[in-house]
Length: 121
Image 1 (spheres, one colour):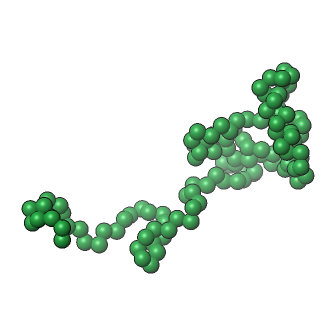
Image 2 (image 1 turned 90 degrees about the horizontal axis):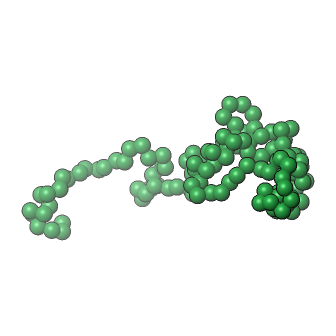
Image 3 (image 1 turned 60 degrees about the vertical axis):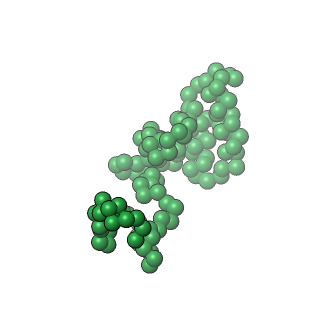
């Protein structure tokens, strides 16, 4: 054991320390395995209490609560609400809408079409 008797006596000796409240499983070598997924994923639901996404009938996209939850999980993100109202031409919002409409041109699914309608593309 490294160090002198005096140095070693300064620390308590532990026997088989087991880490409590760790959500990841222990592998055969004793390490913890994280498959890369976050523990508290955003619930991708469109119905019921605590939903974070709008149903396609409502225009698809995230709810305000969903955006708050996403920002909480991903600090520093610049996620903002869709541009749904009337905007002045050449304003920042108009440019953002134009960019979204150009990006989403190929969306042919039900939710994609609903989102494009909501953004007034």
